[in-house]
Image (cartoon, rainbow, N blue to C red; front, side, top):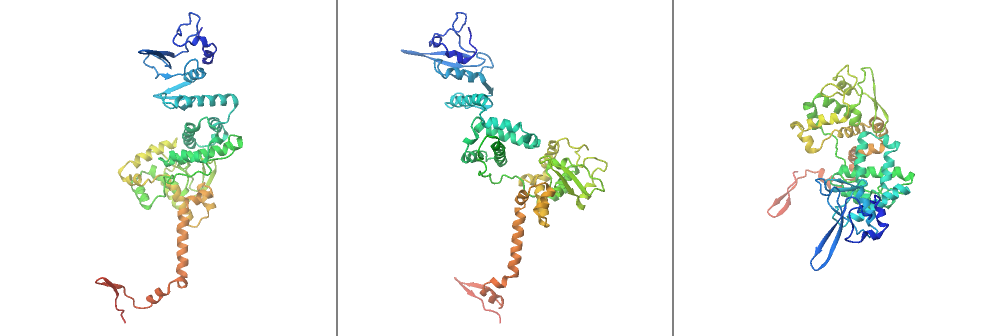
Length: 439
């Protein structure tokens, strides 16, 4: 008969007499599992060596690379055959339960494969709360369902990095050192590294009260410097935009400047009536409703748009954007043109307008609470965005104070020299000599 369960192959060791295994079940002897075959290597004057391999689709154009198996009499043989049966192939890479394995010819292949297989059994049959289970539970939660599609997209990428690193490890086994090493390993792309850190920290925060971990190793980890790819737009950027951008690209940028909203929320704005004094915006990311008073200069730009349109921002064909991707594609095509070469060089991006909005509000004296209410941002984030404003304001106030009280602290020598007809020293030969003062 033919056995279908690899573990049953170990029940009768007599059938595994090396080098004499029949391949047919007609004689009543157990045959090798599917895709398993034996190769005998003859050696002159020495005993031949018999190797065991797993080769799926052997002798066909779709044949897989041969994977060396343990000896059939060993305890590892049955589990190893079961692992091979569960493998998936993607090009030259093998995946087991969604995790990529080391090269099949490397010494790390089988230890890692057995680790993943054992963890899968533990997870399926004993309810182990490893990273795979944590991510699956988080993605099935109402918290995940409430996230915007763009946030979910970024989180899925970060979740992939976590699964690559610790798929079947327990969250409490990861230390802050492990967390930082993984962040640093992604540092070539700042946004990827910091996005990974943000997701991992949020994942732990969600998992701790649900029994997946007792502490968050990412809480004390460090961001990769320069991870924010945006900066506030300088004056020349607005000049370029007004001179060269079509109106369907210009108006969304103007809206971002006056309202401080995210690009996705800007594109979903409805056109206010001429009598409206406030715009109502529903934030996709936070699900908050924001009421934004309409600035008089902003209304002038709004009135330049299509008067009978329901949506304020329309695409090149006069229809509202169904998704933000359509706008981003048009924006990128504009950025690829010659007038916007400097934008590309200095990394001026649309999201920087949100920072402009925060800075403008702080510069005119708005409180952090007022700014947060307008741009739909926490006071902590307002402070982060407005650090440059705070530095400039502190420097300006400090210099004004020094100006008003300079007489109290100036060196006496400077005061005496300022009260005379002072002339600088001149160089005569190799020596400096003070010039004669005029009487």
